[in-house]
Image (tube, rainbow, N blue to C red; front, side):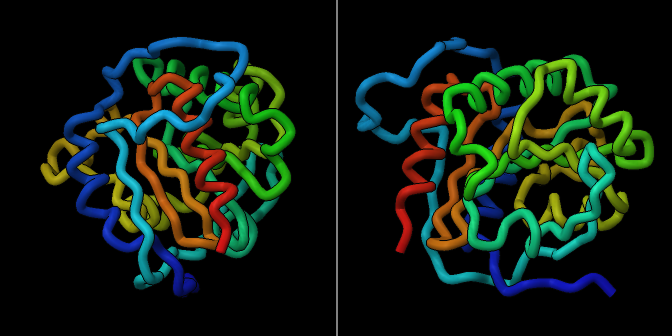
Length: 220
């Protein structure tokens, strides 16, 4: 039986499910800056949503494997007491996943050595029977070498349950079961404060970085 933990963002599921319809992976990259702007006080974008609420019914604490073949628990090892950025990809997806991963690589560069301390990036495979650790490692290295960024695989049924718990599903079941139409959304969450945000994965990486940093430092 898969253990669960009593921590999940409240109120995000319905929003992200709707966002999946609007922000499919047809979004386009709006920039690839080298540095963050001097001010991080820009208003929250209209296409993002934050929630702060009581923990709900918990994340599935499923067993996953990293691209290096290390076994980890989703909550205990990757989320607990950390800020995380979570998205779903699969390695044979060229139309959307490669641009998304490249954009998140730009984000990683902006965040610098913060990633790998109490901030981690988690890219979880939607095709785990194909995307075993070796395949994920080969995919990840096409974009560079990144500390604190895990490409993860595991049991397909458990990953599907996790995806739905995170709210990343389409209200149309036909679209939802079609991996090629999966939502181009990233979720950023701070487990310490239960502050969460969902954003288009191909959003300008400077704006993504601003949200990540804001959520990281808002510790209660």
